[in-house]
Length: 142
Image 1 (cartoon, rainbow, N blue to C red):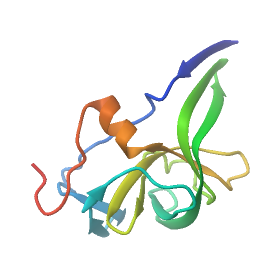
Image 2 (image 1 turned 45 degrees about the horizontal axis):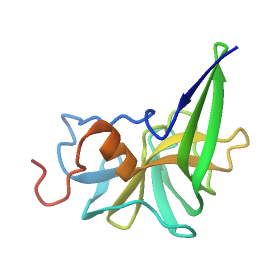
Image 3 (image 1 turned 180 degrees about the vertical axis):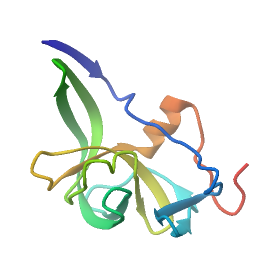
Image 4 (image 1 turned 90 degrees about the horizontal axis):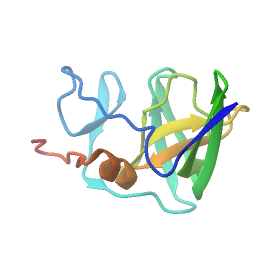
């Protein structure tokens, strides 16, 4: 069995849709809210997330700011560290969905536990630093 460690990097992708070219979280395909602030979440903070596969907002509480998650696929184990753990369920296919509170961008969905009761997010500042980008804030996304 092969193993690799994605130490505090990797497993993050941001894409711009030709339909949604603005500085908004789209928590439904036809509804969203503007991003006004970008920061990492705080421990015990109430947060929201959106999953396209489950097609609705999920709410939960941040239970850890430094979780480690491993997954094995085709004999290769990948371990990702420095994840935000939130006590809510997401659905397979929701990966990459936003973690937010109000109008604040906080992270991207990375993984879920087997039971479907915990979700793991990459911190938004880690995503920005890893991909060398800045998340757009409303009203102008340049």
